[in-house]
Image 1 (tube, rainbow, N blue to C red):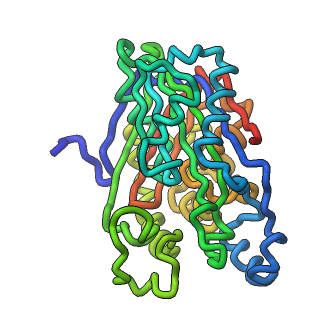
Image 2 (spheres, rainbow, N blue to C red):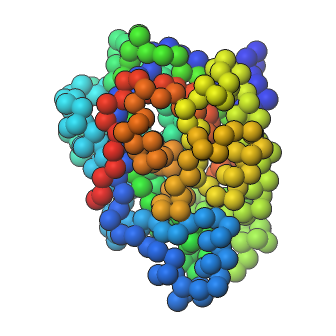
Amino acid sequence: MSSQRLESGLPFSTAHLAMRGVVCALPRTQVHNADLAERFGAEAVADVSKMIGVQSRRRAADGQTTADLCKAAAQTLLDDLGWERDSIDALIFISQTPDYVLPATACALHGRLGLHKACAAFDINLGCSAYAYGLWLAAKMLDGQAMCRILLLVGDTISKTVDETDRATALLFGDAGTATALEFDAAAAPAHFIVGSDGGGERHLMMAASACRPYAGDDARLAQRDPAKLYMDGGEIFNFTLKSIPPLVADLLRLANRTSDEIDAFLFHQANTFMLKHIIKKAKLPAGRAPINMDRYGNTSSASIPLLIADSLGAAAQGQTIAMFGFGVGYSWSAAVLGLQSLTVNRLIEV
């Protein structure tokens, strides 16, 4: 057992992680609330929208996958940075909507991007906590010798998993894919991470019959639902988040030896606007430094934090010190404080 464990998770600090660039790829199709009024009724759409705060969301086209979005983001990022394809030492793909169960989508993307064969490539199955988890893993892998550059591809096309008759999920989720360029830099400012898990939340956000375990119909909440579609117990997720995330914020600031005044932006997974406002208030954070953009994009799962970097921080991101917090499906959570002094590419594209 690690003697360093915190109540909120496992801490880790490093002083060599440099984030060189972020590109977010959005599908061109926008679905506005008015487009859903015929299906659910204008009043029902308005009621749900008032709670979750979503006015529009992006939808991947038929045949367009998370890998397609991440590939476009990665191509743009590598070109903008001027990084040669054979300079990438690892490709990490984090998503819950891969192209295939097998082979690993990371391997497929490795080939589609034309990377060198001397390159590690693997998938990770994580959702809302994915981005900071991926940064933490990359920081552990970067050693300045075998591993100097890592391409972190994170995204989801959750719209492909929702039951279109379930307003709780059909109105909430949007699609996006992202690429982040990470490099070993001995002069980088320290970065700090906390990661944690609680498998007791296994059944509160799930697709019960989506892989190899047969669904036995033993959960009354899934009665009359398609078990191959996304199910979410919003109440359980809300309670977990309000209980777990404010202490995580406090622990991360202590780990980084910073006050909230020393953080330029607090980037929370964009789960639900009502929930986020409660977290920000409970954690006693300045609301003006905790951007919310899910009114335009919905809950984009694993892509929501890099989307905040590209969209809400934009050109002002370079040089900022940010804190990020991902939480949800699993239950799983992750948090990070890091500086963006070396960020030279940061933008959105449409695909």
